[in-house]
Image (cartoon, rainbow, N blue to C red; front, side, top):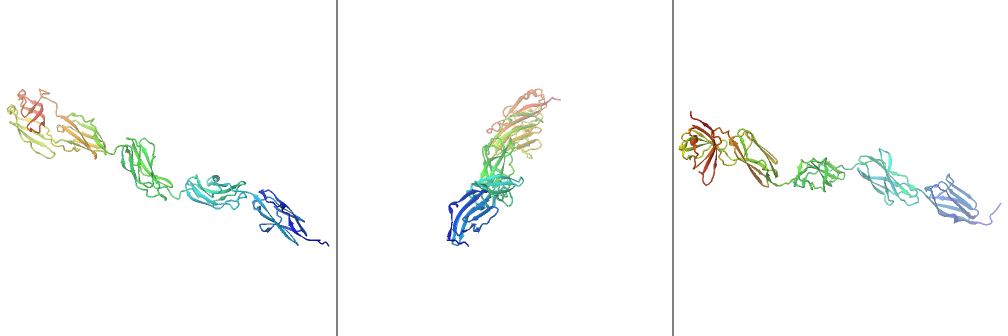
Length: 515
């Protein structure tokens, strides 16, 4: 029997127990000498557990030495290892740190998706529990369209942040997302979403506003006013877009923006004389909504302009009885002027008897009315004794009644134009016609004189004419052999200060020789 001569407390040689840093997959090996009598019993511990030999871990103990080897290292092998030597005289312990560098753990979840809209969303996550022994360099964010099944990069995020705004999604498509932590060793396993999200706004675009009304305008601008949309789409209206289309354009284009919720706006820089239509869209977070109905065509023009009658076609006119007469007159003015035609009242009369006095019977004054004109002395009536009857037709001016369309006259008024027709001209249509164009700014008047000839002259002295005044009589002796003579004349008052100073102009129409 052998006996130890003495005992020595265990002592672990720490010269070879330095911190070990290796990449994942590499070997870690410790070769440690130990002193003590009797020879100490040696154990290795990790995470407070006594280690034993495994497929990747081997412990070899012999008197005064221990060897510890780790093969196929992973990040899980990182930590503090303890070697313990113990005999009857006591014990000794020593620790050594092992750091296996590896990819980081995946970020901690869940991966939250919020603020989803038709073109993007916002992702958030937590840092990984283990960075792999190296500082993180960032996070890789990826997206996958469920229709393609292919992951593509969506963003690279700074390591200090754990959220990211995602853009570039296609509306109404479904997406999955995943995030991977990154260090110098590579990318972690991904943290993914549990379900796909639909790229759709949580609100819809607004409905169409009311039909715009043009409330003010001039040559170069219009001011529009409209009603709010019935539905805002679930998000506040942030403004309006005004669109226009000119007569020569192929479609509506944006011409003005109105911020806020004001339901009126101005469109500037219009081209005078060009024709435009306008419509409006409301805008919220989802974007512009449906357009309103378009306005009626609007011509860029002044809003207030005094009427002006184009006198080009208002030259004095002479036509024969029974013919048709037409006048086409353009008128400018804003607002479009109201147009009226007037003609002085007519009195038709006949000389009943040549007996020294003109006995004048009024045949027409106003429609449905009759009256009389006082008789006047006929100068030197003896010169008329050989005549049994003399017929005169004249026009007596009195007032200006407004003309209306009837069987013989037609008036067509539209904006900026008036047309006047006499269907079958009569002698009674002769005279001055007055056009009046009036609006809120002012008025304009223009005249045209129309003469209607009765019949062709048949007298033997064709073309001869003379006049009768209150003091001069024509020399009828040259026609003394006639029994009957028909005359057409025009009566006009020459002076308001001398009512008796008047004259007749006439021409011989028919002469009848004695039987």
